[in-house]
Length: 414
Figure 1 (cartoon, one colour):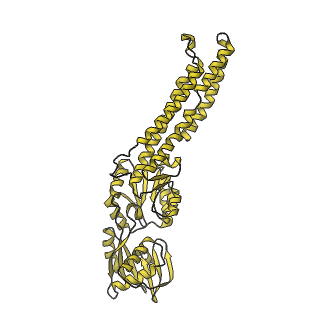
Figure 2: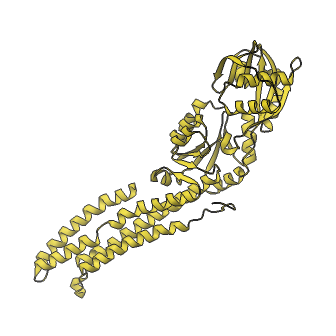
Figure 3: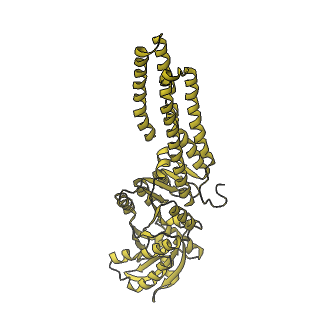
């Protein structure tokens, strides 16, 4: 839209000046009857220069592009988001629910001597009943599936980026990461080796401490989406630098990144700091896109040049993003980038066509060929030519309807 506005800002005054100069030239130097020739030539210039095609060039392409995106399960909030996503050079991916399935499950329960597996599991699940974190839900689901009795918790407290604490069955409980135990002066050393081993295998170790003593580990695995690696390969082929951003354990994030082919990882990032990471990347002058699905992704999605939300994600994430991926697949990001670039190319073709047409048509309408050939353009022919330029722009925009993203996986779109 801005490109068309910039062209029109120069084009329209130029045409009016040319029309005035045409009128003066015909009135002062033209054959008799001067007034008739002057009127015909001036009107013909104004008719052929009418910038209908220029005005149509951007909106018609965007309209077709947004409709085409919807076919591929990509909902685009506005034309600006459609044009901007093709300019993204750094794409930041949240891990949980974006690269991974967002359906974490408990894979391992390990209790230190003096503690019982079922006991720490039940106590941790009791504490997590008050939490809204996806990992908390995984713990609860697994505890219920094992038929454990889940006790109630009191004095519950959630510490952002660390975990939760509270009292369960008169025992003080901490459930979270190393930072949580360290900040409460609990020695996590007996758990560290096992936690590191689990994290290196791509699992999230959740540490449990009871009454100030390390008690055990609950390991949670969130499987990768089956198409994440292929989609990230497509994004890299499109020239994007892909970055993984997560609050999870660094070794866990690194293991996931290696599985899907991501080189740059920002791990153990507090929810409040995700937007700051985006701002730091933007400070290098790169156009940054962010893909996320959770409540804590909303500020980062809003901070990014283009926010893309997973359709199954939190409402606030979808509200903060310019683009929503209904199918919840990263292939949708690659489709959106490819479609955006095709749309912007189409807009430029339309603007070029409209501009070249007017540039060639105006001298003809002004009577540039009259002194040599006696040829003067009929206003009716100019009107037809003007309409034809609009038809050309609309036809070119409709070519976008045949757009197919490169390396499209089978069965997509449905």
